Length: 453
Ligand SMILES: [Zn+2]
Image (cartoon, rainbow, N blue to C red; front, side, top):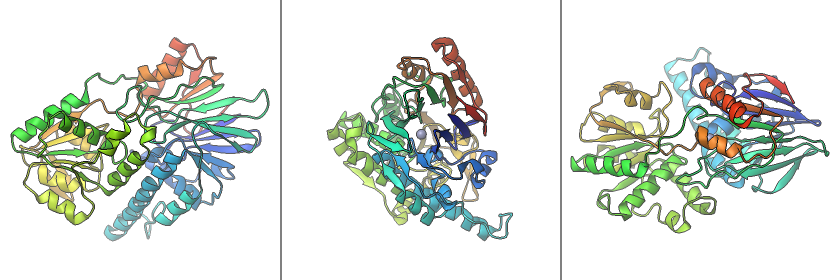
């Protein structure tokens, strides 16, 4: 078996691992590179290894795992794309939005002439995304399907609606069993059940986003209650920039719990201002059986929540002076409707900007968290006088301790463990923990490396 590490091998984005074995070429994940420019430029290169694939398997719908599918299809891939049924549905929401953003970027580059090329083209279009979505083949977790002579199975790993680890078994009695973790969720998560234990792996590819850290034990519910109460007392509003899929639903769940407990005033309106978050919330409610939340609670998730669908409604809300709680995307305030609210709210000390989740270096979210007192929005410098807070404890990723606990379920040491999907420190730290605490051989592959097991 040969594995080509074509992404998420020197960072957390662009997850792509090509498995060559028993006459088949199978791509595990087809993610978009995000963040640093150096990484994003890889999106424009077609790796020759990706010619003549037999199948693609997607662990979950996050764009760093699925967001390059339309580009792969644009380059001629016509085969099956296997994923869990919920991943297929979420991918529709995420890929169409991603294609829309790519088209917008190209349009903007052409309008303002900051493309180096004569005419900027989108990385892919909505038509490419539609074509990719038509190639999705749903595979129910726990069921098996055949890829060439290999057997393929998925097992839930928490993290995100539909997220699974991928199990690929080579033919024959001596055939190797490969497990690719995808992104592993937390042992106690607001929305998702704990990751299902994996008992057998001869070859393991494991993520390491939090490979060098443990999450703080603080309860997000308490912090949220505190922030909302203090803001309301001074007549202000709370703006929560939130990733539309997963994070927005977790925040709604917490707010509803606080409302039911009488800890936040029932008269303070809650707005969900993101068409993508509204769509994703509908999917989470439809797949309530896959969640750790009682179905009755999911049914009431949007009770009394005002869903803001049109841009006009969103602009009107940004202009309102009445106290409110507003959840809007994007989560790092890099774009989307949250910018309109940010521009209106940042200059006023009575408001709170509450960030939930990791803020990538260089993003507006990271700058605000670092205490910058001025921020550029729509080309204008806006003073920041609002209270800037962070809500800890709602990460979708297992921490170092939880990753090791999940790995301990594997009965026989894998022949080789490849540690991927982490910043260099995090990956190396998990690699040494795997070696020292579990006694397994492990390594961190380099970007573009091909390993033989
Ligand atoms: Zn993920």
